[in-house]
Length: 154
Image (tube, rainbow, N blue to C red; front, side):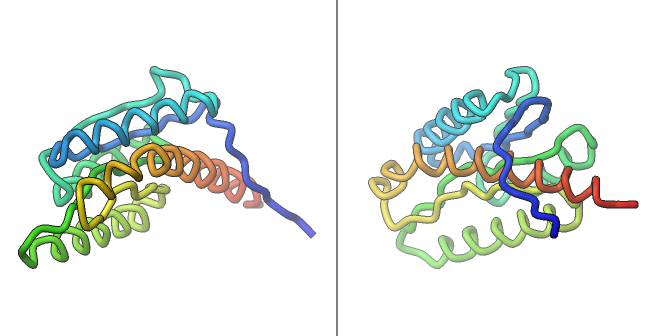
């Protein structure tokens, strides 16, 4: 039996991060914890590319463009959609998530979705450190899993 386990070694991986500037304080906190965790896992500073876009709905297109470069083994989406008084929250939450999934499946590259969807600023701020770290872990693990699966080809 062959078993492929979790591998959180980011050495040699190129990771792209797209951050929404909407709810900027939350996005920057997510980015900070994510980049720190990638460094802890062995990612080189010059192997991490960070860019920002206006909001969560713009994230999938930026991810698609990054994926098309062929440079990255994993991508990460960061941002926050905080419920307001209108239906807009559901649209932005659902469409950004669907777009991220479509890009990941279409490009065949893992994308860790770190777009928080919360009821309040306080909830978003309380989740930034853990979510940023979780996204770094997921991106690295899935990139390494993809590499391990590729090695199974005859």
